[in-house]
Image: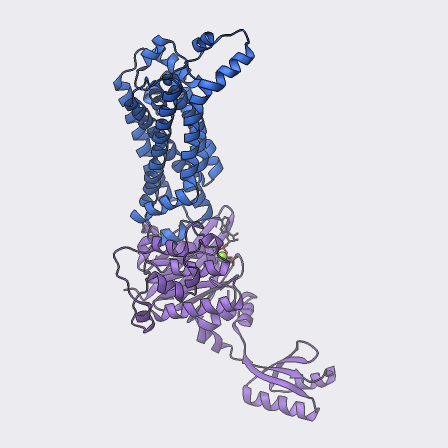
Length: 285
Length: 322
Ligand SMILES: Nc1ncnc2c1ncn2[C@@H]1O[C@H](COP(=O)(O)OP(=O)(O)OP(=O)(O)O)[C@@H](O)[C@H]1O
Ligand SMILES: [Mg+2]
């Protein structure tokens, strides 16, 4: 197991997977506050010359809170795509290239192979999320005001990381079923957005991993508070707000529900992946 | 312990509507080198994949190192090293790292020197292994940049890292230059001397002739023949003389040789090259020499050889005892 973890870690470094994910997240972390502070007002004032700064400030949430909410929204929308396509080959490519054949015959266990991928890339994503959220926190604080507690940023980052770990488990499962990297990435994205769509449509997000995304975007405030404020920072938060209104106050129990459901799904997907790898034929053409 | 390292009976395997294996039966004894030969698409790789525990047969029994293939949970249980036809590597690892990754834990470093003394010792020291196959200079280079020959050698090292008893090598010497092929054959021989059982597939028959104890021939998913190499070569021990003449000869002269009672067959390979199959070496050579002398034919070279595996193989495939 130690050797497998070492191998996955080397892979993440040598093939720039760590770099791609960390850099992309970091980019989002810096871009969102900048958009809000500089670019959006510029766009507004050039489009509507009569508009003064106060009116613009009423339309968009020019605050650290709004900025960070926007960041987590972007992290969901763009971050998921980046993760899906940079990690879609974790298992699929190995099956496609038959790189597992010699290790398998040499006694490497499927559970070690899958679990070490889960461990290493969970860490990669968690570290990237926390780091980029922290950077976004600092930068937005400097541009606006420090009004959000860092502890809630940490909590949101962890929730979001758990969501990304769910995406990882998905990538591994679909990869072991299809052995096709690109198809795996696309399928996982469809699953991710599909879950969110259905969850919002039927207002059952708290039962789903997508609940984590919504929770992460509340930045610890609770959805009803946001609804009362009437703040709309980004499109995806919009969904969150609407759901917040329709389902009333979201409590800690629904957070626990989302976390538990996601954890169960992660464990199930991982177990299914191992089972699939054990029963399938290897070294196929 | 079973006498056989691999005991396969009546193996069938289909891919869609391709009936790849149609009752393969094959037995590899412990400690021997087994040459598995057959044309492209005959079913060698399919059979070897099943032996390696990576693929399940449709029917038939396959026992490898005492384990029935259908009952194992993981190929690792078989104590095999499998070098597939087109081995795939983690190109981003260095040769040394890739060996470290596969090295089994908890076993002590035994020396290749000890192994060479024939003490049956294993060798898993990475540096010794790398220099054994001639990759010491590139130990810290990324495998992605290796040539095919280098990859084949590295593959051979990789499958030894966990000290397996049986090596399954799928065309280990194809796609290598003659020198590379000789090297691989030498390595196989050395591994056999260390006590490993080895089965390797090939369609290069001279490789089989050089190192194998037993030969198995497969065609269209069926075993045609399986025999000790010596027996295989002895049974059709018909001697053949290869003659190179100084100048071309006419048909009448040739016909005269053909009429000789000691001569079975005369093949004119080129104008000056003759291949003469005779009943036995002694009378055959006398007939040939007196024929040469009578017609004052200039002789460049004369060589005696026995029918080789290639010719035997062609005989067997084309309506032998299938
Ligand atoms: N995964 C597969 N799907 C479909 N057909 C297959 C598959 N694997 C093997 N076959 C078929 O099974 C037959 C035997 O193939 P196999 O690879 O075992 O031959 P081989 O003896 O190893 O040939 P070669 O010398 O070219 O390596 C071929 O007709 C091949 O097309
Ligand atoms: Mg083959």
